[in-house]
Structure formats: structure tokens, C-alpha cells
Image (cartoon, rainbow, N blue to C red; front, top):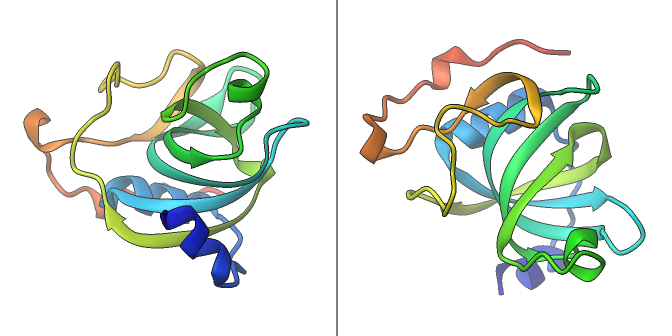
Length: 141
């Protein structure tokens, strides 16, 4: 279990917009400590795929949650693994796992995310004609 291995090390990095964008472009699996609702506080292993601005104006990250704490799993019955939307300001810490993901997950939308008013970066997979776009990181503060 990667999540448990991650917990053994100290996670001290705070997730910045550039770090999230880079993780999406490089397809890095990451562990985050998320300050979600009642049952959603804690560590999660995720595959980040889309970063943008929500309709309410928050920076958000769409990711495939591999394992970890989940309010929507406990309360709404949404299974893990599965898609989750994370607010960047609620990601307390993050750590690169060292693993990569190479395939899109079920129902992945290569055109963006309908819960976002603006998509800043969206993962591109090999079967979509992937070009490494790590030079196209948007400078956001």
C-alpha cells in the first residue's frame, strides 16, 4: 500500500499551482493530505489529471483517487478508486510517490471538466497524441 508507505515519511511540502500542473503533465502519482469534510480529512493517493478554476472561483484539481480518506465514499457511497474534485486551498501537503500513471481512467474527459469554469491544464495520454507540455506551465499565484 503506497499510502501507508507515504505516511511513514514526513510530508512537508505545500502544494502550489505549479507543482500540481507539473504533476499532471508528468503524470506523477501523488499523496496529498486533504482537509475535506467530516470523513474526508486525511491522506489520499491520487492521479491528478485536470487543474482549473471552479465555477465558484476556487482553484481545483480533478483526480482519480486510488486510496485514502473520502467524504464522498463514506457519506455518498462513491467507490474508491474513483473520481474526486479537490480544492487547492484544502490540500495541506503533497508528496510525489515516484510512480507514474500512463492510462486514462474510465470516463476521463480529454476536453476538460464540466465542473470548472476554466481549465488551466488537462492531462494528455499517449492514445491522444501526447506531447510533453511541461514547458506550458501557467504562472499562477
